[in-house]
Length: 349
Image (tube, rainbow, N blue to C red):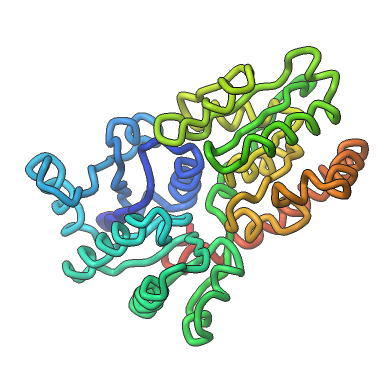
C-alpha cells in the first residue's frame, strides 16, 4: 500500500459546539483513512482525540501568546499536508466581525505555503460588507473545489463562480441512524441564547404546552445545550425553570434527540440531527441559514410561528404527526442523495 497522504481540516472544532462536531464526525466517517491521514485544527486537541480518535493541533492565534506551543505544531502539519479543507458550515461570514477576517487569514496562510485548498459543505449568508463579498469571490476563484450545503449559498455569486460550486448538503447526513427503543415522551428544546425576544420565548413555550399538555404535566420537557461554554444555552433553562441536559459527547446528543418525541430549536444542527433519526421537529429560523437549509416546510420565522395561522398549522401538524414524519423521511433521503456531491472525486470513499 502506498504511503497515506495528509489532509488537514480547518473548522470551528473543539469548542465544543455539537453542531460543528457533527460536521466533523460526518466528514471523518466518509473519508477513506486507508489513503488519507487526518489532522484537525481544533480549539482543544485533547477533546478532538478523545471524541474523534484523530490528531488535533491548535490553530495559530493572532498574537504570540502561545507561539512555540501552538504555531510550531500547526505549521509542521500544514507544511506536510497534501490537502487542506475548510470543513463547513458557516465559516466565512461577516457577523461576528472577526469571523471573516479569521478564516480569510487562515486561507492566506495556506496559500502562502502553496497548499491546495478546498471548501467542503460551507454555507454563505448575504454579506453586509461588499468588500467581504468581493474577497469571498476571489477565494472561490482560487479553490479547485467548493461544495455548499444549500442552493441559496451558490446563488449569492456570479454565474462563472456558481458553475464551480457543487450543491450538496450538511456532512452530518453521513452519520449513521441511531435507533432508540421504547416510547418517546420527552419534548426537547434547544435555543441559541439572545436570538429570541422574551415575548417570543413565552409565546413558543405556551404553544408547545398547548400541543404537548400531557408531557408538560409529566415534567417531560428538557433543554438541550448544543453549546454551553460560549453561547450559554443553559440560560434559557434557568429563566423558565426547566431541566438542562449538557452532553459530554456527540453520541449523547444523538441518543437524546433520538429518544425525544419532538424537538423545537433555533439551532440548525439540532434540527438536522432530529431529521436523521426521524424525530419530528420545528426549526425556528432566527438565522437565514436555517430557512435556506430547511425551507418553509420544516422551518418558520418566530413571528410567523406565533401568528394565528402559524399556531393553527403547528397544532394540525402535531395531530397528524405520522404524516409529518413521512415528510421528514423523504427530506432525509433527498439529503443523502445530495451527499454524492459533497467531496471532489478523488476524496470519495
